[in-house]
Image (cartoon, rainbow, N blue to C red; front, side, top):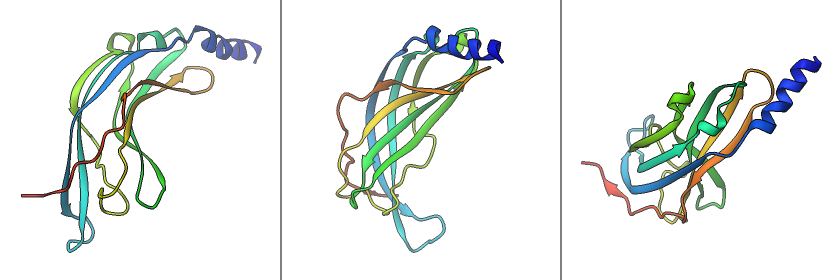
Length: 158
């Protein structure tokens, strides 16, 4: 047990912070029919982004893999804070830990109120979860947008 505890504690000593850059190139909000209710309209947001991150400092002898995800944080019209994962990736090797990705959200981004109208701007952040062979999971942030980004007006789907 003492050996496992020493291994787990050494992971905190060896950990250093990664560097990254996150840019949101465009956001498009489209009105669409809801999945379960065909007569109800719902807004969907499509976020186009650029990620550049060097996560190699997170890999050491006790790192099994990284879970990397892009999160949108915003407060809806009822005043409830929402944190929505819109993209993710698992990084299993140190050789794959330099991320350069241009794309759009992988998961559907919608608000429970069915509309992005009158919602304050959102902040976007690139976060990670280090999964070790032995020890506790550690979380962190690799990049964040410099300013909050507003949702554009809704467009009707063609």
